[in-house]
Image (cartoon, each protein chain N blue to C red):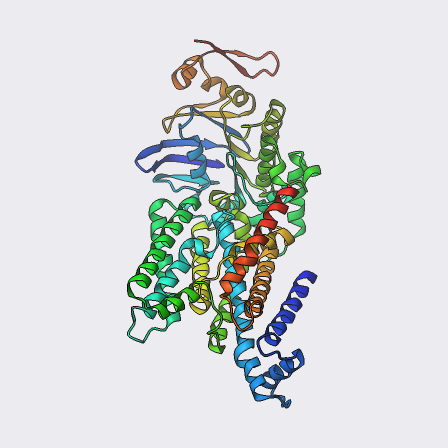
Length: 254
Length: 332
């Protein structure tokens, strides 16, 4: 397993945010993390890249307990794209993507060829190479998200964690970003709100509710009308799409 | 690189002017001879008064001005990066207010029974204030807004304490001395101050430069920095500690001097951009030059009188800051 989460619990103040979650992602596969607002998706991602410490349970990357991995080596492996991280500093697109090389560089080591290649490659992959010199604060929300993903790619991670990466993106870029991530061959966990996009792009899904996994497995097994009614409180009709062959969810009013 | 060399040369020129300019005009050539006599053991024939003024008063003063300016500006750039707040500067953590209270305790209340100098009192006050704000911030949740609010609360508390002591215990002459000191003064500076001020500035600069990449990584916040492999807690402790020590050292020697820590980093960012590998040297040199300049102005703007240097830095700093803000706005 590339990422294995075993019985992990996390409490913020007195609120139980993650309540005994167990899940696993195979090398190179994409796991979609679904669930209503406040179900623990963001917190789980933060625990996996150790921005928060687990109260109990173990998280392993390639069989290694992340609690024992130094922060810099962890950052050479795992890249994390936060929701709506922004800055007031006058950075260019290239400056932001270059930050992704931080864990790969020693304190005194100069900028190298590897770094240039990784940055240019990452910029090209999100289609922002021609705008590398543009200032961050002049970008739209969707462009900022693409630059964040480029920054994460410049980290050349073997595991990629994305917290609602398609927020603020128009539909073209939503599809582009998700197909880009799924084609990378990098083990990824993506927190998503759009069930249809999750069904289209993810190899497997895990549905969270109140900090617990209530369903996990292949999209066709997880996304049932019953589960959607129970977890999200909406009536849905599910059928296989004639266009892409994946599951398609239609919501019913009332 | 060329810019750095040019700035270093410019700083050297400004320091020589700072030594040459004053109530008694001393030619730059005499200055050079006097310095050479002391450093290289040459024996140029010089007026002994000139020799004394150059070496014991003006050169030490110019060197302290330069190193204090560099220290304060460095503290500003580090705090602005770590707290992600363009208004952060050394005094935001309550350090200078604490230093003032410490100095006043020694000067007016006679705390320390004569064993404690004014500078010593100021230094202790600064560290106490920093620790208090640190404890407050730890209790309040460590977000940058909270840290700044705790700093503001700490500053208010210590300023109130200072005012309380001055109004209840000081005589008129003491009050005047305190006021002068609160606005910053270079008049008491001698060589022993140089031996503290210059090493503090250089060591602080090197420590900040060592963390340049970490400072860059704070651009998107502490979580983003941690996700990039920065040991956030350790870097925060080290860099907040360094800024506290640098500010305390400066304030204990020359009083509280505002605006250097705020304005210089913004000006430097405007010239060399946001990358800390370039920004830190630019800020340190800019702070040094600005302070030497301010010291010259404070001595010559009113004949026969020396203005508190904090008044000069604010008088030049505030409009300069406004210009930077307007120009930055236009370029967006």
